Image 1 (cartoon, helix red, strand yellow):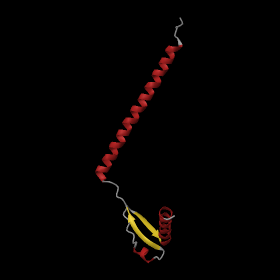
Image 2 (cartoon, one colour):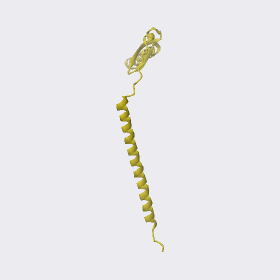
Image 3 (cartoon, one colour):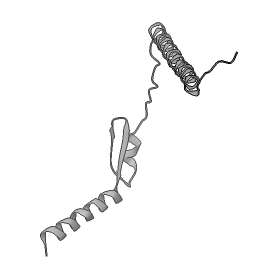
Image 4 (cartoon, one colour):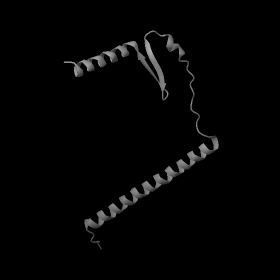
Length: 103
């Protein structure tokens, strides 16, 4: 006896298995992700956060360098303006005044 099965029924069965596999994989990933997050939170609660290194750098030596016009620390970043930078800014300012206010 031979069963009469059309190709649509076979494809529907294969699609069902593929969908089940994808749903199972996504569910497993979600469960593993939640487990890892709980483990991380437990680790932080027991041992505390990872300490950030603190740097103590002496910057007063920058005052003795002749080519530095100005320096400052902004949000943990050292900003340095040289005399050349200041001269270029002044020349740009004078050029702007000349172009816009004198003919």
